[in-house]
Amino acid sequence: MPLLPSNREHGWTPFIWLAYLVFFFIHPVFDHIGWKEWLATIIATLIFLTLYFAFFWTKRPWNLLCIAGFVVLGLTFAPFNGGAAGFYIYAACFLPFVTESEAAAAKGIALVAIAAAGEWWLLHLSNWFLFSAVFFSVFLGIGNIYFAQRNRANRKLQLAHEEVERLAKVAERERIARDLHDVLGHTLSVIILKSELAGKLLDIDLGRAKIEIGEVEKISRDALTEVRQAIGGYRARGFSEELAVAKATLETAGVAAEYEVAPVDLSPPQEAVLSLVLREAITNVVRHAGAKRCHVHFAQVNGSCTLSVADDGRGGYMIEGNGLRGMRERIEALGGSLVRETKSGTCLTITVPLSRNHLSASGNQSSG
Image (cartoon, rainbow, N blue to C red):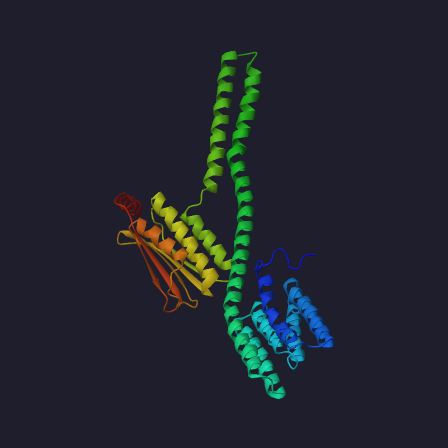
């Protein structure tokens, strides 16, 4: 049995984190303790390693018991070994990954810090113990709240993608079944009838039989073309299908989706770019925003098409990542613009100018 599960989120970093355990051996090595203290140190280390690796295999509430075990080890060995402050640090660092919210993680970290400070005050331990057990526990624990929240968002997004993929496969099977029934049902019936008629005409009217066989060949070729068009048309994802996938992703992730979408005649490059931009924007809402609602608006305004994606999440984070920069580059390549507002949640407004041909086509459709 491996020490870590194969589907772990942290990769090999749990082995790197074990480097902090070296502080627990500083006192035994430099103070030349006796064999009894060495035995106690080794036993404590084995208990810690058992709890440490068990943490990655278990779920709530068992992984919380592992963290409680870290605190017990710190309480037990701190009076004899200042390096036991590391057990408090491990407990504070692991708490954000097992709590259900950021507030619960902060409360747990505070309890760990209070336990360490209380032991320092009651047993008159060194100030170095207080600094390392309290400061590093709070500092590293709060830092891990961000990483834990990001992991939860990634898991949420992964579940949403898996659910959308599963629903897409089900819909694909149903769509192909309907298309094949619609395309081939009538066609095969006609082929059967004409084949039977041609067979009967072989001994009566050979010329008429040849005509019927030629029609069977033509109908068969037309049916093959229709089947290819039906399957190919279904697999090609356009902007309208991307809108449906985005809505399913938001709803699967627990974000209420509000849509205001008007028909707009787009060129193939515009449709492809807006589909990619919408996908990236929805991914950011699910992964980073922490939103409860998301509003998508798409319409034609003054010779341009405008797409806006607004959420009621945390907002306020102004640094553009690679995804947002990529969105902006794609939009600017079409002569458009991207505006980002983060005062109350986040709102992305994408504007792309429509060509004259598409404007004329849209006007003709409206007048008709």
